[in-house]
Image 1 (cartoon, rainbow, N blue to C red):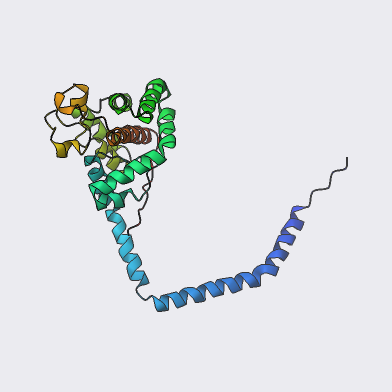
Image 2 (cartoon, rainbow, N blue to C red):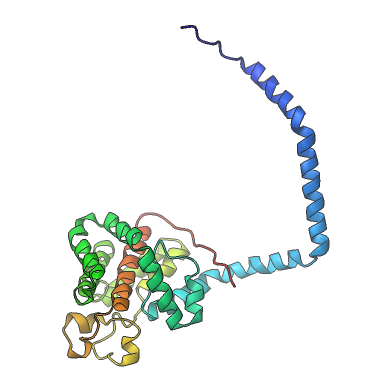
Length: 266
């Protein structure tokens, strides 16, 4: 079969130059129109550059605001994950009830994607994790919650060298060391992981307001008669959010840096 001879490079360049000459007037006209439009916009919005300058200055406070939102969410029993929409912050700023509703809806909608990411990160734990997830799906929260607590604790120990719930001083030291070797965004999330919340509080924290924040790991696993009423869907999802967050942030902190998402203000 005869093959068509390749077109010489010089001919290709000439064709490209000819094509550019043909479209150059349209390009020039489009650029001129864009310049005119921007000039008109500036005439009608004299404060544009002032607002832009203010916005750029505000960016320096973004990490602190993210930290405040995530700390507040953790204190209310909720943690972000790789699938959490940026609008979570607005729910945090709204109220505890708003955050509860938001996170329940998010975790149920993204359940499959989140569970698959956890299983992918820890295939050696698949049998136990799948059992915990199935127990939750079946509404057997009394059994699902202790299993997820145990796996979050073990995943932390595996990645960090210190357990999440028991090795407090060693865990904090290792989190600080890990944070010093990564970027500021991951460091913020690592600090959130080490935050003392109702999850890790002592068994004596059994008042109704405390229980409304999160299930108490110590009270549950030690079988305290003060903590026998933990088996709810919301508590199970809160524990699941902790497990997903622990998996997510420790995987990111030990592999590569991640970039924060700039959240829109309403």
